[in-house]
Length: 455
Ligand code: PLP
Image 1 (cartoon, rainbow, N blue to C red):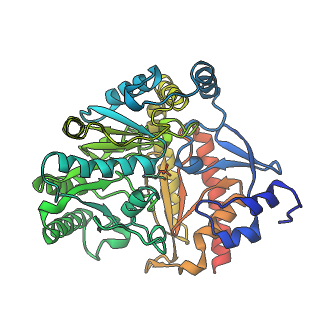
Image 2 (cartoon, rainbow, N blue to C red):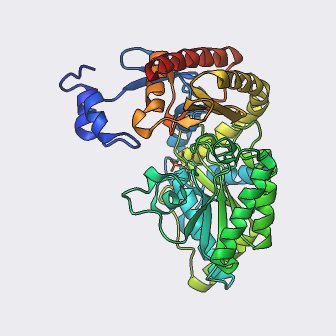
Image 3 (cartoon, rainbow, N blue to C red):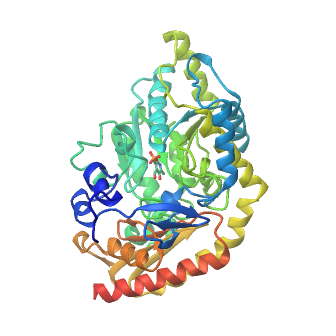
């Protein structure tokens, strides 16, 4: 790429530190400058148009040109551009959004706490696990179990929950009190001759062994993203959550569902918890909550947790937690409008109608010589790229196979992101059947070219 002096590209290289980017490579390659969006497409500064195959970052559910969300933000900006909710202040959109979320919840919930990102909401959930156990007089019950390959964010606490090596390496993480149990991914971790249900039993057994080894009186909570999206679109096997939840119940361990990606229709249900039969004590939401038009996240808590917050407030004199922009009026207004659009346009019904087409095309690519495993649910899926289909031999990290596949996809007009060795797709929920075919046709060509390159 030729980078002109004083161009956006050269100023980017000079001033911006990019999230999740190889900082060294970026100085050589420069950025891809995105200038506008249109439906499920984005357009770069050279006029190239791409299908956003990952919905931005699993979040732009309504695409990139939804006027109603622009109008909702504008209206709110004119009326009340900011107010906070500290010290008992409030405003109507935050109240209405909280009320709506409680109505939509798949299990009985009591209160909603607003934050700005998934990481912050997960941090809040972790703090509440500790706060709750202090409030009820069992302060030793503080350890939190997450899973290997889980993704829960990047702040110090949520990055500790995350079970991916690159989020820990050289950041001196994870913090103590956080443990990681088995990843429920059958293709990689199922043993020869083992059925999916036997594998689920083994995962649950392993969790129980961890709890017993640590001492059940020290284990406070278990975090689960229903379908583990960023870890490689891991769809836990049948009976897994049933067995896991039985163990959690047996040892009185709280369950927190991280619905940051699954929430709001991704799997064809309002929440992933419904899709997998989860009964969480807290639910974390973000991304599709506002269709990504505003940064906002939310944590729903049940009455058990809320009454502990009330008791601690009586003892301490306040609930000492909150963000300046918790429940920001513009963000809550946009989120409310997003939920209205989901309902009025029956987005969930749309997902359920077209998901079979998406999953059929995904599974067909399972036969591709580069693909070891195709897996997904609803409108999310991944193709795990392998060196040897028969033996499941993976590529070496230095091969950069998924990065190369991502570059090929870009050349064929699809934006996706390398997640491990996975070619992942998670398009805006408004995608049509014809656009799904286009997405997979282009992806097939990208994989063909990647295969030729890798041989
Ligand atoms: N939880 C899950 C399941 C996520 O996928 C993400 C982000 O991708 C997060 C938490 C963190 O959210 P954020 O990037 O908004 O902090």
